[in-house]
Length: 419
Image (tube, rainbow, N blue to C red):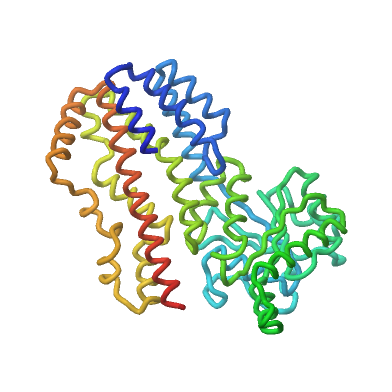
């Protein structure tokens, strides 16, 4: 993003706005459309086309539609597994809830799930995880399973097992594939397998060798029961930062419909550096959309002063990023309790909790930029649009990077506190 803005500035005095906008879009196309972007390639091409025509209003209309669709998109994830597979624990972990917290999926060693049960994310109610019973019972046979659970409403299926996958799992996967949906095999409780192996063979134990044996066993098992080219993700519900969970996150984000990726990205628990970077990368791809939308009205004289990316919008943007990364006021208070410290102490070594310190800049260069921005805002036109666009991109990028870096800092403090 920073390189794109730099190129944009270098060409600012050489080309008209329409050509600059078209060039900017062309340069960013590859960056935006890779896995995790919120824009399908055909929509990106449409935006490029209207900008080349100089039709900024049409581009903004398309962008507003994209942002609204992504914000309101519902995400429905089906999790399938029998008793003792760790299915409920997996759902609770994805929702950031402990087993004993209010609203958590019930955990037990006997079969608890008799019918499909929805569990909404506590912070993002448009995201729902469905606890589905395993196959192979008189009520849920592989041939009629999808129809019985209403498969059309689900965006993807996670088939989970703590040991061997069954023929019923294979038949179900084939039915899901035939229905045009994505499915993922998750082998749970690998932390327990590692513990048992280390305890039973302390001298010859090798973590990576054991994990590879588990993976190979699952692959051979699925090949034998008729699943070609299966994808296996080894996970621990108590250590989501480890094993294949980060890879599962990336795969799901890349394969969901474009307008549903935001719902998945923002709800992911920030339990690893990889997850934080996944969120940061996704949200950076969205910055230019918000910037174009907020800068379009700057063409009208005085409009940026009346309705621009002002201090109140900047503060709202920072608060939203803090919520996405689990650094909102409530979460910070909970983190302080975990660390046995005070919120004030956390404020001392983080930057995103002090909005005014982030936006305050009394340097000569900053004052000159503010004067130039005010002059452009009064006169409106192309220069005002460009000034507001660059301002929005710069500040949003600064807020996002600050929050993501603070999230990493707090994560490492929590991990170190439990070592």
